[in-house]
Amino acid sequence: MSDVARVLFLGDIVGRAGRHAVQHCLPFLKKEFAPDIVIANGENAAGGIGITADIATQLLESGIDVLTTGNHAWKEKAVYPYLDAEPRILRPANYPPGAPGRGWAIYPAGEHRLAVVNLSGRVFMDLVDCPFRAIDAILDEVLCTTPMVLVDFHAEATSEAQAFGWYVDGRCGAVIGTHTHVQTADARILPQGTAYITDAGMCGALDSVIGMQVEQVVRKFRSQLPVKFEAARGRPAVQGVYVEIDAGSGRAKQIQRFQALPGSSGIVLRAEQGLLPE
Image (cartoon, rainbow, N blue to C red; front, side):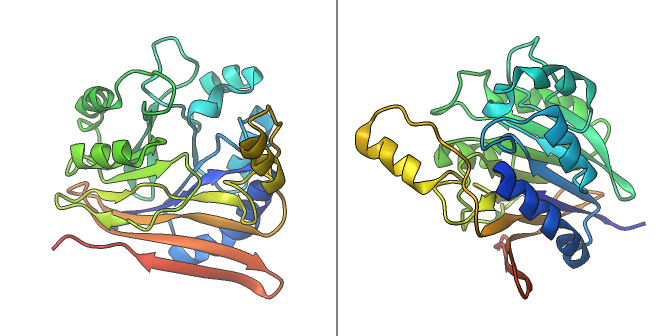
């Protein structure tokens, strides 16, 4: 039996460009990293904001095992019954009781079981319940079943994401930030064994403003008038992290951030090992 769970995590999938990039690059990434489980944030997969049942099903059928989301999960109301019915899609666990869907679940990861928790930050975000208190309650239940826990922390403020990582250091195998669509260069394993990155990045058009058409976003900033944003197309990238979590201790053994760039001559993979504790 393998002593680690190998996890491939893909950053926010943005629009059609992001979906197509994932479908194109995922077989290549699976060969490169040989993951036991593939997780991706899909909250922006439908036109750059929100997700539908059809698109979620398409992504799951493409080779993703678990979809996490965030504050945009609620954009398409027709998806609410799907959030209740499909166990492979999560929404933030710290929304008030009665919200559709589930905030965490335990999934097979090779020969092991991995708990995946979806949480939302609160700074510059919806006023949801406290994610710090929420993870305490979730871990009380989860750690009775498996020591391996990965958290998608969907947050705007880098300070809140970092504070959360330090708060659960040694209690979770990985804290992977999402939401900003900008991959950060701080992949590391914290002193007590939690793999951490502030934001895993995005899967979408590179020539964009966080996945949206440049001219529309610039017009919004210049005019301060309402502008309808549309997901950008063109040269895509798939960004994310690869993490190995020890099956016995639940602590991370390594984290790599990566960017896969599909092109006419094949897929170019740029990967960088995260810092290890001293």
